[in-house]
Length: 75
Image 1 (cartoon, rainbow, N blue to C red):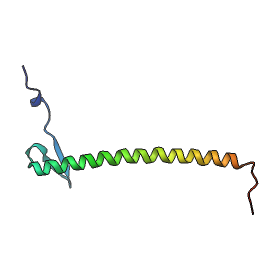
Image 2 (spheres, helix red, strand yellow):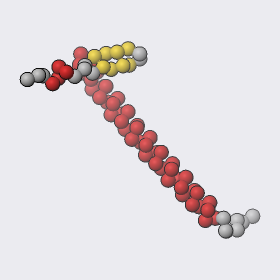
Image 3 (tube, helix red, strand yellow):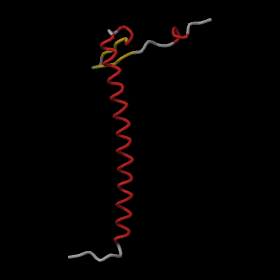
Image 4 (tube, one colour):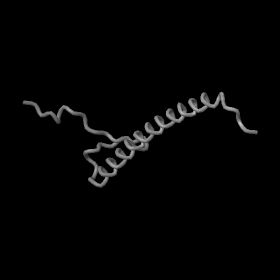
């Protein structure tokens, strides 16, 4: 029976062009790393949401432009 964890590579943090073994970091630093990972994940989620909103807005503007074609603008 083999130990599964021995087959896994050590998790590495690359920060400021330096590499660190995450398992050897103090718990306080591990928590900071986790916090950064959560923040990065949330940023990606919200960036994707903004992209979807932008596409929806473009579609609405296109529809508005099309429907205003036959309406006379005021001076």
